[in-house]
Image (cartoon, rainbow, N blue to C red; front, top):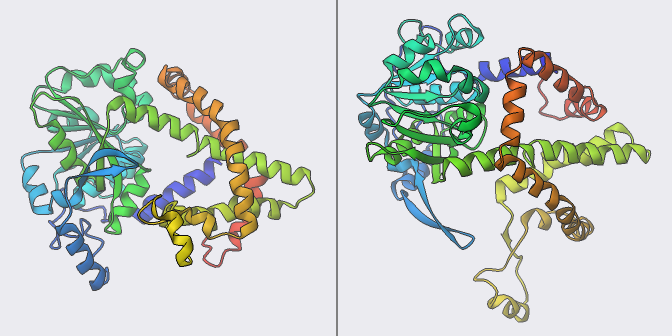
Length: 432
């Protein structure tokens, strides 16, 4: 798994690079302010016209999310000319060049902002930054030098690294600078991490709702990821404004407000739940039961993973969970008049057979009842810091990489994923 992950990471990184190694430190300002991506110039003219119109009428607004009013900030609030002027006297010092550092840094650079990268000299991240066009002595520096040069310090090191490096980095974050995070972990769990921001700087958060690779990919497509923003400390009175502008700078399409606490609670909870841990556990449990009952590996994988990821889950991403009912007889329409302005039903269910729909509706409450206690236990473990302490202990080991590689290798070696490699190779659009 370690070698597979390495190859995948290298492929993703290569695909997302924008410039050759000799790139200048500030990208030229895009001529088309509607795209927010120098790589989106080939979009169809019809789409371009639609995007321009769309953005010209959208901005900060209060929306109704299932009966709860929330403020949403959109990219159109910050046209590129305004964004570049707002940050004309700033230097964004990106500390760390992992997944988020890579995506956010390249996007901000493409948006015409002055960005520098700070990583351990001649380490792996240094080499990766060189490959992406960051230039030593101009846009690439050792961490301490980058912090000294920066006005906005974007701490995108791993959670464990933020804790380990804080004693030597904290004195460099002086009055007048802005301290930026993309995860509330270090600040919220300060008793464990010992990360306590200086009292005389703004402390803000922009948390993209996806991996750094997705942040980069959506930006290159001229779209944008959704992000949450938060303010931990507002010394200047402009912390929220700065967080919103930085959200646009790093590639967000829209942003909603949260708190540092809620961001980290929901993030750790989601990763351990349906986003990663929970879904891996459910996939494996279903697959094993199918195999124990005589189903072949290919059939078990198709009915567990392939159909979910290739057929059903995309419907959720594309259409959401609701859709208007098909036309009803006039007499039947009256039944729904008092229920909602437009009758609605689950889109994914509506796209499946009547047999599948009936079974899913019957079993969904069973799974909810069985899983609710597990999710309650998980949330408590996140909130009381148990998950934080586990992460810091494991990720702080000297044998961290070896231990992680061993666990990932065990997953990669499970029959379900070995069978999946063959199933995926059969897809018409498969690329090795």
